[in-house]
Length: 175
Image (cartoon, rainbow, N blue to C red; front, side):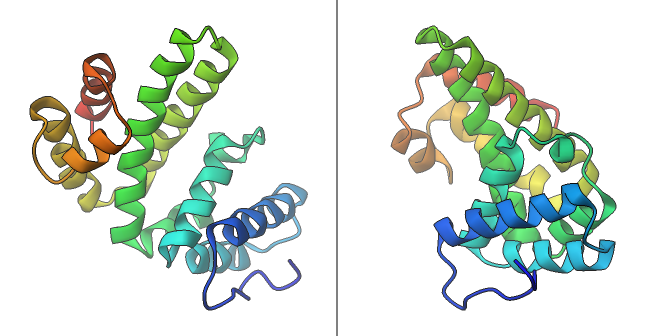
């Protein structure tokens, strides 16, 4: 990715993943200025597919970049509060619930990976400080508790059971 700001107008999820991988390689190598890093990530997270691709790549990466997000990452995420808040909250829920599923399948490495995604996401939530996150976390927590509300369809689509919904509630309680 020679110009990190060049995104196709109809960016796909897969393209966003590839662009994020390239961007993270440049970040790790120290070849991007803070401004270029911020602009590239802001461009990615300005669309739903871009944001989804960014988060799935960034949060699951073996790179330590997501363990200590730069100020450029934080500022970039703050630039698209609606999309970013929604995906941060869903990432906490999904990774927390998946840790349970992986343990049920005796896949401890995968469970630990899901827990790492949850920790990284909660750290990003604290650093980014978007008020929309608090509102969406409360809505998702309530949907997990009652089975109703704006996130009921999301929870049902992923077929989260009572134990997973309880873990989701607990994970979102501190937000």
